[in-house]
Length: 131
Length: 221
Image (cartoon, rainbow over all chains, first blue to last red; front, side, top):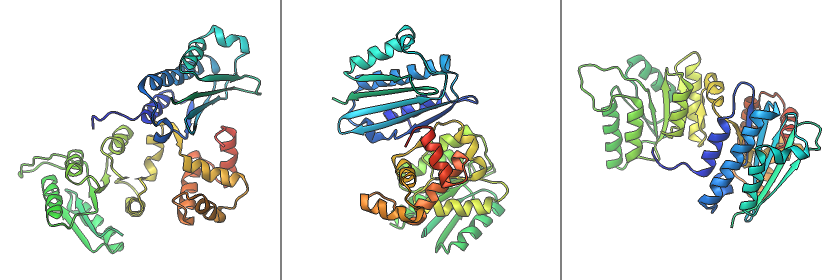
């Protein structure tokens, strides 16, 4: 009962902690196999990134729905974030809390793109190599 | 169906009705005990005799009486039983309705089913036995909302495959063939139907079309 939680469970718990009467949270593809062989340093960066996205969502977005989808292709992990809030304009990204998110992703040799041109809400695509 | 089942329930009437329910499934060997210590002893003996149980149905609270018991309640019983017989399936049949406690039974105690003693509990118990037998966890319907609230809705890769096939215009009845082709299991029509029905129920939509629309809308397919 005291055994260490697997990484997918940690993510699932953390995302769920942002769920309340106003916001619904959805996860897709958060299986144990997605995170296979990801070392603890990268795990902790990814964990913080997801947390920062959620904190930002909670503070600014006015979204009532947030979705994380995870995919893995060989040794590349992709994270797709979507919310249905008010969105952000391009130049704001680097002025708020998300600048550290960008920094974290760069530190694990990943890429992050903000799709702010969609009609409503915010889409963020992240990808990074496992090794 | 299960071959050998143990019922741990302190109320005689409660135990009797669970026995009756199992009779309907034609389970050949059903044992029942009124105390947790006896339940553990039975499980130990069954393992020793190489005729282990394949299901335990247990209550959570056992009233104390003049027989001093080492194991005081269902949670402790489950824990002890799982130590000596980890693969034993467990359904909890109890009046408890606090979602936090029930959630922890699934997460920490790895139970397979939970049925609350309430209206329709006999029907729910039957459904839970059938589900647990085919390796699906079961939570009685009246509780689903409460426990779900604690968690994000999680789509598994399997869920996404099913909805993606629907979105490509594959008819529900033809999905099994596509799954077989890709080597994805379970691929029987009944398990596909069951999964899609529970998805629809959980997401509060009524048709496959609405299910596809919802999943497209939130961007998971």
